[in-house]
Image 1 (cartoon, rainbow, N blue to C red):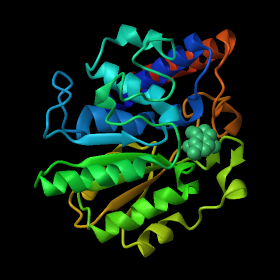
Image 2 (spheres, rainbow, N blue to C red; image 1 turned 180 degrees about the vertical axis):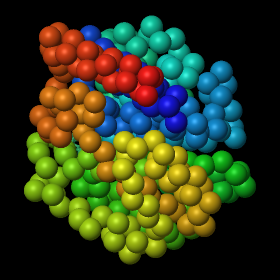
Image 3 (tube, helix red, strand yellow; image 1 turned 30 degrees about the vertical axis):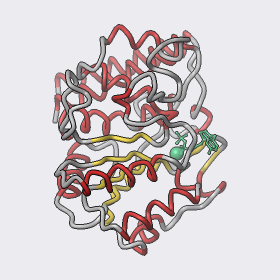
Length: 275
Ligand SMILES: Cc1ncc(C[n+]2csc(CCOP(=O)(O)OP(=O)(O)O)c2C)c(N)n1
Ligand SMILES: [Mg+2]
């Protein structure tokens, strides 16, 4: 648990460095999802970074592609590519584009950035795995912004119809989107009841609590129907001036702000290490 907390903190430091170096990017969602990505890449996903196209791997589709900094950091830290390459984030000809590009990096499983597509892609992949009688899982991360798109709900319905018990969806329920609070812009409450009405199993957790994340993912793997983990996360988690402020959805910290963020995160790292 302590190791995963330290990894999540390291991913947060990577995110700040990447976005401030690129002078553009999406820090709030990426920071909020660092605990979940640490758990996925370092504990849950059955993958081999040295053989990324291994046919029996678990697959991960990131639908809210704009938070990709957290995925790239996790992938670099698990050996998919050198950590040094994180410096190329959002640069021309880099593999790690501002929105995930499958063409540049097939281990992303899909391109994304246009909200509302990821779950349909994941449903298609899961159906294919079932037809091939595979035992692996398809994970799909979506955001509350993705749930504003009608296509996401068609995919939710399809997953029930085909009884996709090897599909596990994680919602980054951070209550913010590009221009404010989700419930003011496009209300989603009661989200768990909406999923239940489509016959999905629902699990609600604090998405910044590693213990709850691991327990939920382990429970989800045992389910006999599609599962959604509604993970309440704190946007901007770990950086005091970013937390719960939608204005950090898609804005880079300047040099001074990045230094302050890194100082806070390093202090937290030492606290976890000595705690
Ligand atoms: C189909 C589509 N419409 C609009 C956008 C523009 N857009 C980019 S991010 C975003 C807000 C999405 O909300 P969420 O994913 O919850 O963002 P976060 O929590 O990371 O702030 C919007 C509307 C988009 N990427 N795709
Ligand atoms: Mg959101």
